[in-house]
Image 1 (spheres, rainbow, N blue to C red):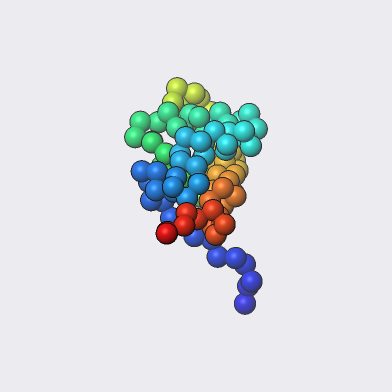
Image 2 (cartoon, rainbow, N blue to C red; image 1 turned 90 degrees about the vertical axis):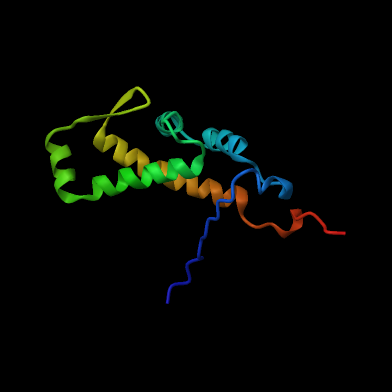
Length: 128
């Protein structure tokens, strides 16, 4: 049996974590951007400009969708033979590059979520 640590993310929204000293979406994204190299930072910023995307949860959904599309073998072979571009928020990128970057970006986002929001019992407000 594997001894991997189970990781669970719960998105509550509306600043629910703020009273516990955790960052809300805007400071979280700012901290995330500081940890990213140029291509990942640019992809994140473009995804945040997509209509209907309001927070990091939506970015993860978009990245999951891109990953699902590109995992389809016939689509992957098609894009290898015909390197079409994908436009995200006005920026054109080659599909296969987007695929590689999207997987890296998703990993960085998840790592940052666990880094910033991991339960820390020392910062919980007291209920006196």
